[in-house]
Length: 138
Image (tube, rainbow, N blue to C red; front, side, top):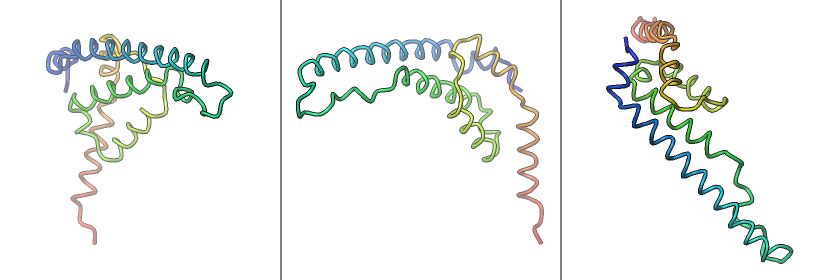
């Protein structure tokens, strides 16, 4: 079983958290610059036949959720636990990732996630899947 200390040393999660924070900062800056550019474009093009400015469909803070999902999924996959999951459980995990807000990608939250992970159900599901695959189907 994975000990969170081993996982953190193995995968260098401190570096991942740094990259996550940097990615959020860059995305936030890009979003703010796009909004400013949109205002400048709108100030000249508004009411004319040029259409709307290119940034009017950008979701507020949508970049944060996409970045957060990417980092959380990568941590789960790189931990090796994702590989233990059956296809059914992987699909469930992927679906849950799409449908909910995630905590910030911090060392404390990563540790809490792995400490609270129900590895017993992952192993039971994998054993059941293997049994279904190996048993004779007459």
